[in-house]
Length: 422
Image (cartoon, rainbow, N blue to C red; front, side, top):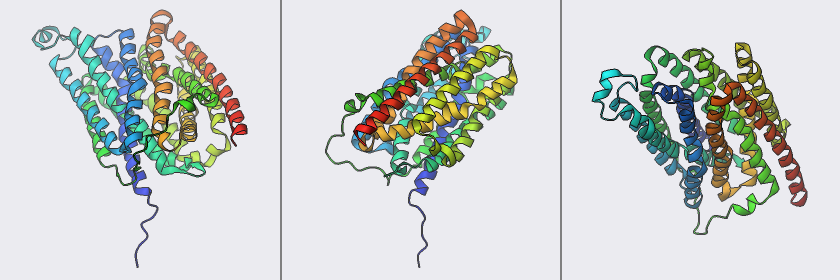
């Protein structure tokens, strides 16, 4: 008598959970604390915003390039491994550059012996290495999302319950990394940041290497279908517009929240704790979304997320110095990010099925996060220099309201599309 091995997709799902945990741990380290490291190197707010915008620049093309190859070859896991290896190499470059220049721009006589001057590091080397890091890790999310969606999509659509249970490990990885890094950087100093980046990306490569390949698609010699006809549909265009504006509002958080807290006088542990609050509620959302996600349509979640985001950033603009309000604002991340992301994944799966899936995920990353991150990174730094952080968060609230309007138009267009093609 043989023992039933259980659902065949469970072991791959566990491996994807480990990958999400490792990947978002690297994000939990890099996104909150890289601006503080850049600042320690003597960079201006505009320069920091410009480097942060490199992530958006790379998101415009890199995810689509990775996903185009995946949709045509079916070898998503191998590409994930290559992407993780590239991220590790770029992070090693940051670590080596850090030691080449010593402690930064204020090192005194020691800087005279450095192989590279701090000014050259700031202006050339660091941006190049950060850009290479973003090109590499920019392929991991769309490749992994499309591979995971392939496992979890049935005739009834995406299994959101099991998706949430896998995706929550990304939030767990983020929260552990952001809290642990804050606790480490407070006593050790920001100079150890590049070493931590290397260690986290080495963990990511190890996780990618553990992904199974048996579930990957086997494509025939026929070319993959084009995506342009889908982009001509009003429902799809308005959907991506709503994603752009809602995520644009959040670039005020992703690129500048740590600097905002630093300007208000909070220490690194407090910075980590406030980031952790937002990710803790992400974990709760993804763990439990199977109970209530289906009670609202995906477009309904887009509307709710944009509306709450507008209130969130307006409150931060009005009274961001109040700690209790910052905690409350971070709690809304469960809706403005987690609920929004789950709805977007469901809609991408609906609009881009089969061999379109990878490029659909890449377009979500590029049009949603690439363009918005580019505009928010550069524009946010410009706003802060001229009108301060208050002006930044007023603009973020306005962007969220624009996302609300686009989400309403997307919902209306989707209903018309369903009436024509039931």
